Length: 264
Image (cartoon, rainbow, N blue to C red; front, side, top):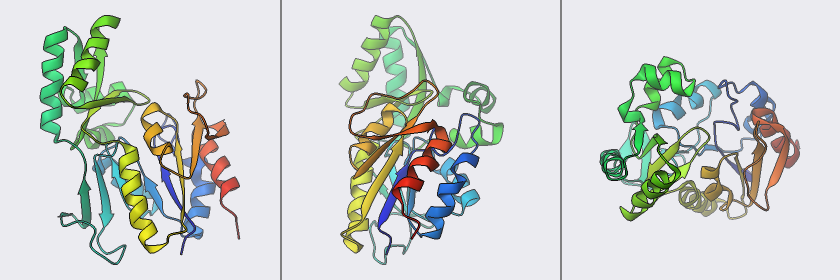
């Protein structure tokens, strides 16, 4: 049985600003050799995550859209963990339907006068240009289910009011590397806790490692045994008690995991 489970963000951690994971390959090879579960825990959609899983040969569960849902390959734990089955996954849904999130953003924009632009307002070409994703990946990023990335333009007072109104609608927001995100009563931490409990039902002694670089990673980092902050080009976010990489992005990701996980 593996002694660790690794939870990781994707952007700025396992991939760099050009969406390359070359720097992460040394640690990825060690993780695969040791058969350590690697759980993507990200704001990305299921469709986006599946591309990375396929390219890297990862078969483990994953957490999409800031904890909107946990996708667990059927049978991986030898027991049923959810009655909802979708495309070969048992799905634990924690998020709010995308339509409600979009409706709330439009209402908040009208009430505050802020210009709020979500992925649902943008074409694939516009998302590609704004995010740096190629058009194929931008199309996958539009397949939202539980989370809407958005940009907001207005005065400081208007923006503050808009964010307050999101909370007043019993929804939440978080800030990622590029965008704000509106979401329901879910976050990465809640999903990590649930999935950790499932892993520990089979192996009570398992240790969890979490690696992130943005403020929306804090709930994940708060709910693992070993939190790791990956250095950003503009240094670190504020979070106490984490191990910090000296290298940036995927190079830092490999740097820390190669120190934490013994070869033998």
